Image (cartoon, rainbow, N blue to C red; front, side, top):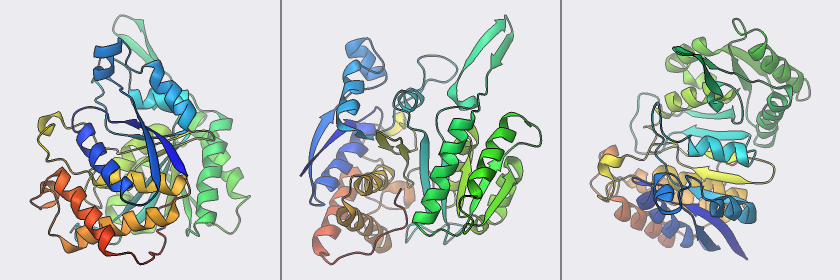
Length: 346
């Protein structure tokens, strides 16, 4: 079987980390047919569109994409490519597992939690306008449909993967209608999964609780903006955004991407760490049913970090992007034994 995948290299360090990941994926065993598409400023320079229709058409055909980082202008410029794609393809669930890699020393060893973030509405959607000069209104839209859908995703994942508990994160003490609706949907869903312990934490308290004791959390479900902030916070527990994966999942399509930025200051220098994209690719392999390949790739990444001889500069090593990919491929080639499944499947 040949897996057709839309490839969105992105900009900045995107093409480097994505190309390294493609090399590793092609060494896992399954066959791929890549349909490479531009997005962002590079796409606009060639097509006068930030998201060309060819990209939309490609994802509609393949139903799965692997994406590198795309620069989003601050306080101006074009709209977020990520947000636009999530809305277009109804990628309602943002799935971010947070788990330590071996050999990476942090202040929080042994973290293993999952952030499930509603991906299509709330403040993060960017629905805003200027009422009068000097006054801007930003709309937070929360619906029963989307809130129930993400709650069921979180509880379904917890049941399937035998996770221990689910926390709903909210601000319903202040936003009683919007966050109150989200919370009611979570409570109603919790009743359908009585075997899974369910808890609720207010978002600001959650941040304090996380940095005090992240081990109290397992699966965390939350609205869009809260998820964007808390997932970055939690990445700090395991070494930073350069190490953690991300998946945007819908009923029809899925886009797998690193959660870090495009790092234009080191673009083209071969220095970038491709781990986040590689870990996202592991999630992609599980999504398309290539579990054995996913296990081998994940085990090889962990082997390279455990060995510590071929890691990139951002984690204290000395090699570049390509050399890191070579090391992961080498680890897969020298270990052909079956590998136990990880709990990071989505």
